[in-house]
Amino acid sequence: MAKSFAVLREKMTPERRKRSDARLEELRSQVRLQELRIARAQTQENIAGIMRIPQSSVSKIEQRTDAYVSTIRRYLEAVGARLQIVAQFPDGASFEITQFHDIGEPSAELMGGTRSARSPRATR
Picture (cartoon, rainbow, N blue to C red):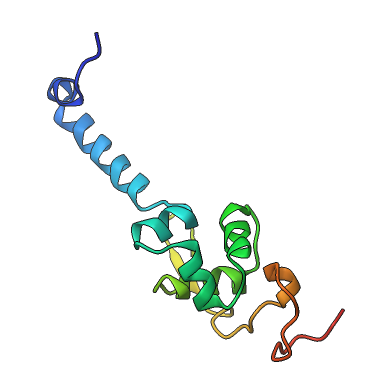
């Protein structure tokens, strides 16, 4: 028979509960793009409209494990967030990386659509 979490938690030492709570907060702060979009009550269609790309491209962005910083920045702006890249070191030091703040939009091919006439990138 399965035990409820409340019963298990009561058996934990205060130190163990504190570690468990800290781990829970850590996990809550780590989300995938799709989870973030859903938590903000947005659909892929909404995000696609804001980004001016097809819905299928939003789906691809959410499934990628590697993407351009500019793509992630545009996606996050579409859900109402701001991208912040922070380097964190084991000694506790952290630094915000600012060189990506003003990068241009990715080319349409990279976004999964067709090239836009307003894209500032040259064809490679």
